[in-house]
Length: 366
Image (cartoon, rainbow, N blue to C red):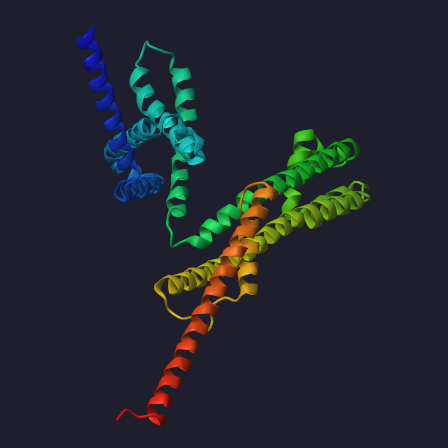
């Protein structure tokens, strides 16, 4: 038992050391660059497979590359699972990566298991078609590739704006499709005999109204109904177009534009706070090093404005924020008084030096 305990302790210690090494490995820039490079190459291979000539001539090559990409993605997922444990699934991007890995494994393994006599040919074909649909999901990783590039800050802000606009746009889209369904029911009941091609069935009516989102062929639909004496359809078409296209669809654009403006304003505020923080740090360094106060450093009013903006963006209760604001305000006042004291001390030293120089001139030593 003692021997087993010693072996177990050494094994646990070795496993923890190995996990720490794996965690450091997954955090390395070289590891990220390697994965990003593989994602870029994989995306290029997926694009190349869309050309029939290339796919036929390089089928063996694409099969081999799929196996290589599968090994890389599985290894990445295993390393991150070991390093992060269940925290791996807290990142939405890791969830997407894990889903893509599962689909790739199924796409690679199932064709090897579905040999003749093991399962019916029809079920195998249906299953393969479903997996081929999920094969296109692999290209989603290229979006992560673009978002990880620091030089594309505008693309990151654009993506974050879409994410912030999601709840508002979702509510608008729900309202749009509710109106679409209501108009579909009304137009189907009124014009299914006048224009059976567009309003004969409920799903045909829904498709027709969905087509009207782009204002496509609405005049032809009106002319077809006019020929059979149903010219009053124009009122329903005008109401539908005004509500769906000019109101709700433009409301989606308005939400996006408003969030873009908010993003730009936040970006300017962050840049301004960064500039103030740099000036603050420079002022503190001058005081510590004993340099006199220079022109352009922040005044007490600037300190209070900076602290006020800084406290607003912090988490915590109002009491904690007030205490922190008071403490930092006192520190800023002490800093300002120290600057004044050093300036006055320098002036006093100059006065004393001038006094002694004058005394030596008036009363020279013999």
